[in-house]
Amino acid sequence: AAGAAGDVEMKSADARPTTDGAKQGGAVSKTRGFASRVVAALASEHPQLYSQLSVVFDSVQSELKPTVLEHFLATICELSAICLSVPPSPPDALPQEVPTMLQAIDAAFSMSAGLSDDAAEGLAALHASHRQQFLKDFISETPSVLSEVISKLHGWRERLEAEMEPPLQRQAMPSLDGRCAHLVFAQQPLVEVPGQYSDDHEPMVESHVLLERFSADVLVRRDAATGVTRRTFDVLGDDGAWRCFHLTADSCLSPRMSLGLERTAQLLRLLNRRLLKSREARRRGLYLFTTPMVRLGKGVAMHVSDKSNLSLASMLIAARVDSGDAPHGTVLTHQRTLSRGVLPTLDDEARRERLRQAYNDACRTVPDDILAKAIQGHLPKAVQRWDMHRQLAAQLGLHSLLCYTIGLRAQQPQSLVLSLSTGNLRLVDLDPVPLPSTEGNPRTAYGVPFRLTRNLQRVATPFGISGTFSAVFAAAAECLANTQKCPLAMWLDYLAMPDTSGEDFHPPWTVSGEEAESRAKGVSPAELVKREGKAADVYSMLRSLIAEATNDEALQTMPPGWQAWL
Image (cartoon, rainbow, N blue to C red; front, side, top):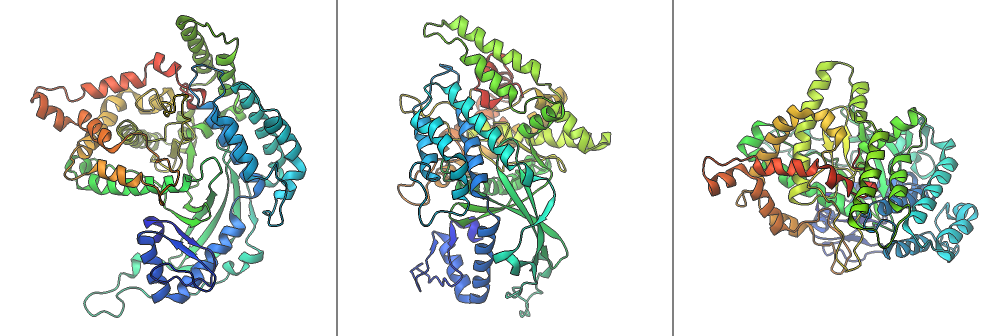
């Protein structure tokens, strides 16, 4: 509850926060909003439980968060994704924010400043191996064009992945040692089931799970698309079930990523409550999925893991590796094609021809059945795949509605995560924040209303797009357009506020609350019937959006990182 309400940062097991969050005993528990009340009540009513939770959080955070080298690789991959997300107009101009981001990476890993007395563990090894080369490539000799920056970042990515490959075999390895050794033993409950002494009602014992112990085995796995390394650890409850978790750390390029994911989860919970109370949405069982998470402070968050989650970009990389091709060859070739032979006086027709050529070359390289083959390999029975396709078509309808109405930043292939066990789309990652243009306004992140590219169309099939997809889109839009029961504008504007005044926070959506309500009403069947009468074509607006999302000319103008051919 505290994690869902706000930021909870427990820095010491001896911290005893008061109701006003004051300092006590030299330790500080920084809480805001409702989280301060939750933590204060927990420390007052259950001080032993609070101390135990603090010890568990500190131990897990210190031992299982990504190492310095892993964090450096993830930051390099994130900057590469940001550079590939620059719209190709002009194709090879270097945005002025890229050198600033390189300076931020330099400061975060102390490349120019050198090691200090309180340097993080593992930073010395990073400096010994890569400091001089990093300063030469990006600081002392800053590249002048975007393609050169992308090429150097890709070289760094391959070098770091090759260096980290031996210890990252996909096998369980005992890592809960040292300061975490006490977690593998039985944990004290230190909490009572609410209502167990009440005569009015029986306690709901089945709704509470007590922590018994941690597993000593930790699975280390790196996402091939984002370069993020996760250590998955298991926790045993008193119900006999194991639950998987992993930690993520914010980077210097997106210091509020965990806050953005938390705000997304809060918005989805609000929307799910309204969908369950809408007649048509409830009849279709519409539900938005994410994974539970809690922020532990210092930019570290703990997420529930699902081993069947796989992004669209990860499927492409796995397919290319199996066929012996370069994992990221398609997107790099697309970017090089756009930047090759750039002329200042290139006319519009020549520019369109260049975009068309790059897009067609990428489409010939990437087949349109990558997602279908991944589902077929996971679900061998035809009836299972049929249910998966229907569920995925419904989830695509909900995802497309959010992308169109609120401008959700989850359209790039590394952010489109599919659970192969259930067919649900899970919002567990966000696209990079779009760079501002030279005029100071944010560049248009997406040139299409939502993502409905070839691989998704192959799985959804034309019958699914004209059937389940459209019906789910319209039913959910009708729920969101009811401002009396679903105050979407108020929710978006409130959740877009930063935690503290003056904080640089970009919400995970690009549309204001007022505009989102207007867009929802524009595609709601009920609102269209009110305006145009019973003879209105309630799907006309949706058909135009689908045509815009699948238009080749619109897809050809998308940046390489969006990977329109996928």
